[in-house]
Length: 181
Image (cartoon, rainbow, N blue to C red; front, side, top):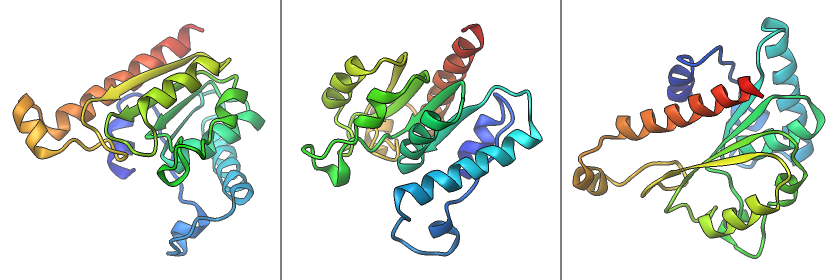
């Protein structure tokens, strides 16, 4: 996320944090209520430093999912989910869609076409069930980490930086839309 922090700084102020399990070097994530509490704490600290700023939660995978839960309790202007983990451990029968259907916060999904945790057809179905305005930026060939295989990049004449710039432009466009709402 440090690379993304640097990129996103082109759009506005960016604050990052780590969940406790990450800071402590554990592989197993903390229970969801603990993750939500840590996320809310980090949001509160960020707001102290930037009290009048537009607040947009951006998270990768589980961070995006937890951000969705936080937005049910905290007033934020937008959500950006980079590789939303819709299917628990890739199991399409275990959808993590309830929180998405409960959202009122405008949401941008940035998803790769090769992401086994979020097949685009399932995400599209869930997006139609959402009451919050939602948008999708597709990373052609991208995996759960939004990485495109080198052979595909070579075939298209693009670089990883080109892909990341397209993602950044999609996020910037989403932020611009939010400021008009």
